[in-house]
Length: 113
Length: 116
Image 1 (cartoon, rainbow over the protein chains, first blue to last red):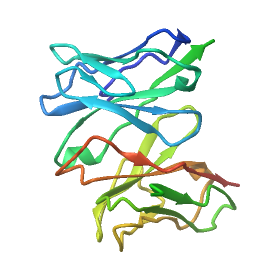
Image 2 (image 1 turned 120 degrees about the vertical axis):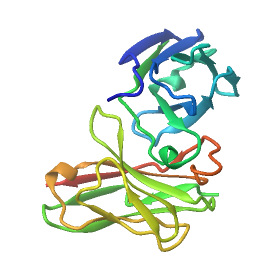
Image 3 (image 1 turned 180 degrees about the vertical axis):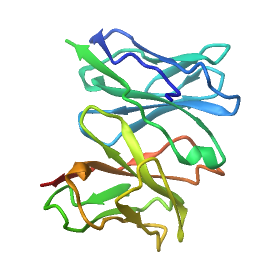
Image 4 (image 1 turned 90 degrees about the vertical axis):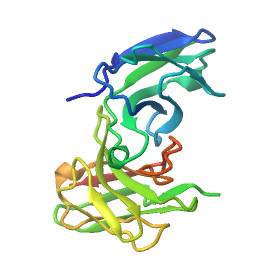
């Protein structure tokens, strides 16, 4: 059974913010939300992760709802190079459960000129 | 700093042949893992290791063997290749996710295997 639900695809205009949603209604208290992306057929690339507070780094921002049942990854100014499949993953940060990350099908984000 | 290096990048096998996909990392990571990705699908975990001499099965281990004799290397062996093993294989590494998980899993560029 899937731990996360993401839309299969989204479009975003170049230069606009891309908001990628993820539903994780069964998330446990010790599970973090991780985001990765996979550009074309390359190896996935880590973007950001968080527990309950909003997080920001040089690549993106992560907004987690107060009940932690959903989150949104925000790319503030999408470029053509952000076209990729984005994966939302929930996993414990430590312990045996952290050893097996489950990558679903993700969201295919297409940035349009 | 090369990161995670996978070889070969492309390989064609005949059914029943054996081969080894190589994975090496130079970041002194304790955790290493192998995933496979089929067309239009997400990644599925095959095997993982939390240190030299320690390996464990993931979601789809059948048909694959692994060993971890050094911290740096984590080879994946196909003993008798089958067409169902045609896939893209990714190796990944990180610090020990069980103890000091910094969040980031580093991936190689993939090995594309075709079994005829």
